[in-house]
Amino acid sequence: MPGFDIEKPTLLFHGSCFDGIASAAYLLSFFRTVHERVECLEPVYYSVRGDWLDSSLPRVTYIVDFLFHPEAQGWWDHHSTAFLTDESKTLYETSSNPKWVWNPSSLSCAIVIRDNLRTETGYDGSHLADLVRWATVIDSAQYENPEQAVLAREPALAIASTLPGATPGFQRDLVYALRDEPVDRVVRRADVRERYNRYRDLELKGRERLAEVARIRDGIVLFDVDVNGVIVNRYAPFLLFPDASFSLGVSRGKQRVGLLVMRNPWKDVPHPDLGELCSHLGGGGHRRVGAIVFEAGREQELAGAVAALTSALAGQHHGSQVQSV
Image (cartoon, rainbow, N blue to C red; front, top):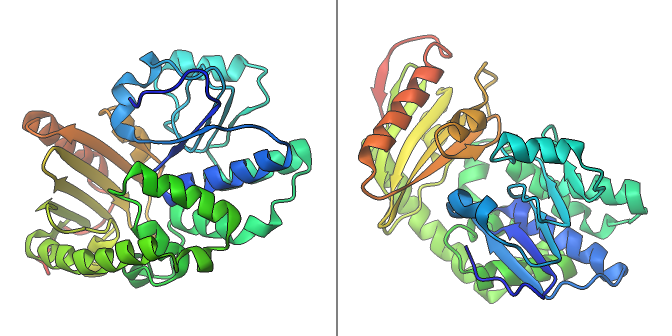
């Protein structure tokens, strides 16, 4: 957990996600109109999940697009796995705090915040409509096709591609920039262009590496790939195997190993709640996508999670063929 100054009003946001960035920008824009003071803007990540409820927050803390915390004065989210314990969910359900707002049916957290502020305060954030629209497209995977998702040529998608692995300072700067400027201007910032050009180079290398190891079985793209020195876009499996129904992949970094399970956004197939499945294995997510992060070396736990998810997806796609690229 980051070290917080308990006396400073703080806004916490999911830093590696465009919806988290956009949600923080939207809330800050509203705060400026009502002279609400936020002195500390901090990204948070799901690697803190294990210690989250044991951590103490500053006296005035707002949280967007992240896990529920009972000490937050304001909290807005849409993840079905937002509550780490039954007690936390019960506390939310029995609370009268109007600034605790959860809508798991919403396609993005930015929409949750926009609609809540519009209803409760009359705030007109129409100047941020494009930001909310793209946050929703990205978070609900409403891309036209896999090429749009992977190549990330539109300004908002280019910005989103720069977020994973970025420094907290970079993510923080983007929140302020998107609060004050339109998306198509922010994308022209030198630091954004530099990271985007890097993304394009590393994503191509990652796609080539993924093509070497990815296989499809029973409609599931399966892969175990070393991501050191490359970027493997979460939608790349469907660019390689457009007829697949799901992807289930292991991405190995130097210190952590990520496990991601996804439904193909361009196929309408029945499936269990993937985020809920992952929450029982130490992760989380949405109905259509779930993720778990393991410390390097926890191979037995990783193998167990892969087996459990594979079993849960079995039979959701007709056919039993095994293919490579």
